[in-house]
Amino acid sequence: MEFDNNKPIYIQIADNICDRILAGSFKPGARIPSVREWGAEIGVNPNTVARSYETLTDRKVIYNQRGIGFFVCDDAIESIQETERRKFIEEEVPLLLQRASLLGVNLKDYIK
Image (cartoon, rainbow, N blue to C red):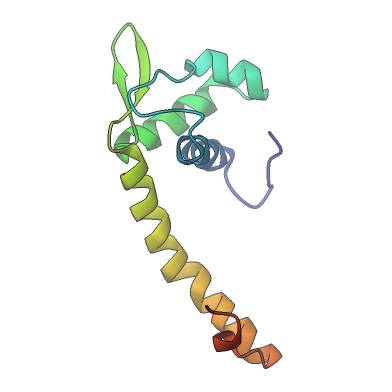
């Protein structure tokens, strides 16, 4: 996994897990790698991974079964999509519209 210096690593890890859930690599109800397993796989301190897992647990994307591991919540896909939709509309669309305006691009020509 390649990291962006402009965004906290724990958030990048959480985003990557969400992307894997949306892509179907981690299915609802399935166990995900442990904090140590994931840390070793991507070359990150387990404490950083633990912080990512805590963030995803707070967002109701994953849950912890004590002594067994972390699992993908049954409604994780819907939860992730809702969060990402809101973020897209609030953060990315305004930037896109501003850039299109500056370049004189009429977005109606591209929307089908």
